[in-house]
Image 1 (cartoon, rainbow, N blue to C red):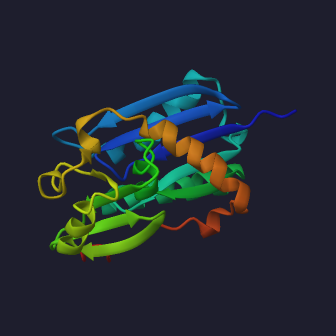
Image 2: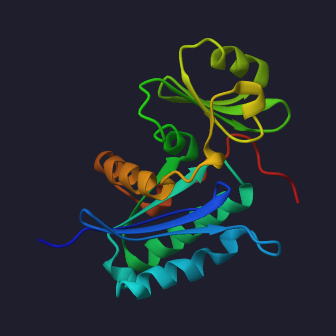
Length: 207
């Protein structure tokens, strides 16, 4: 039986993750942080090449690419989606996108996660009741967060307002979560790279 090799990467959040998995074994998992001179997505292509070379995997060996499609950094969303589409176009592999909100909902075992990420302008990107709700007014999100019905997962900027867990304060295995979700999601989609689109809940900044 032919091996299943999945490559997953994420440049949408505050750290970059590149994970390589063969069948049921994680071969490599790298985390890259921003530097003073470069945003982490600048290292995406070189890190992918490094991971493949270290494991003697050729691009054409990859059967699935899973990425974070956002919301998050607009630069990161663009980088992630573009690299995945070009890679899949050249190698012929399947692709699937997972929202950062869905990924973060899995950092706890809670059956009722509420994920809220800073969307600026007194709004938060909201995922609740297993659904992406969009960019919601912060006061409305705060009422939900304080209702006691949910386990709140957020970022450093919103934690003082919403309480709960900030994903930025602990090293969660986000790359491994992404790769598992991608492998599950591909079972219900054709994996066509043409359909892999960034999730811009709010329009990107002009210029």
